[in-house]
Amino acid sequence: MRQWYRRLVTLVIAGCIGGQALVVALRIGPWYWPWMDYPMYSRSHVLGDEAEHVTLTALTAGGEVPLDAGDFGLSYHIWRGEIAVPLAVGEPIRFHDLESSGDLLAWLAREREDLALEGLRARREVYVLGPAGLVLDRTDEKTVRP
Image 1 (cartoon, rainbow, N blue to C red):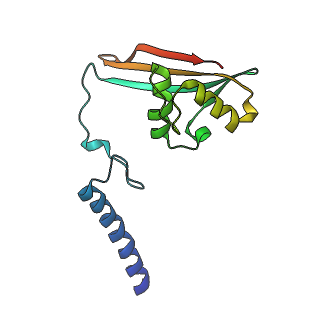
Image 2 (cartoon, one colour):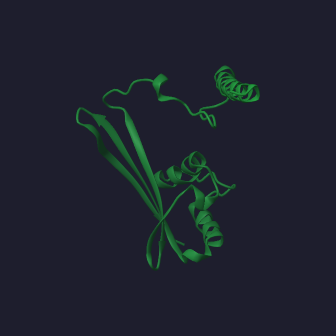
Image 3 (cartoon, helix red, strand yellow):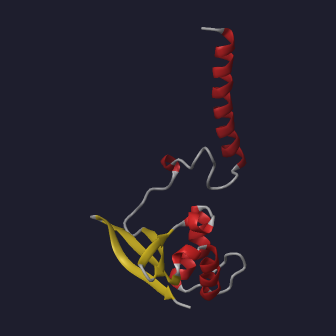
């Protein structure tokens, strides 16, 4: 094997290990790209723990169109925390300084003219961990029309 190839491989490996050590030591945040939180060190789940699933749907003349973070130009975590969950449970929207779901509807209608938007539906399903696995516990849903 050539000497330069060994050095290159060694540098790549050292860079990966060093990068992981850096994000662990500095605790930069919950998500480290390209290194993600590894669930091996997370807490165990016990009976009664909750998990939720959030969906946001555009209501159009042609039916319902699912929306995701890419439709807003956001990461999943920001989309979920600032738009989808607050809309589903009736809390204030915290996106682009919009204060109401009506403002969000007008903004989305401008951004996605192809949808012919008639409204938005946000739905949050909360599941509870039971002996048989995750079981749907409750659903919060809100529909917003202009």
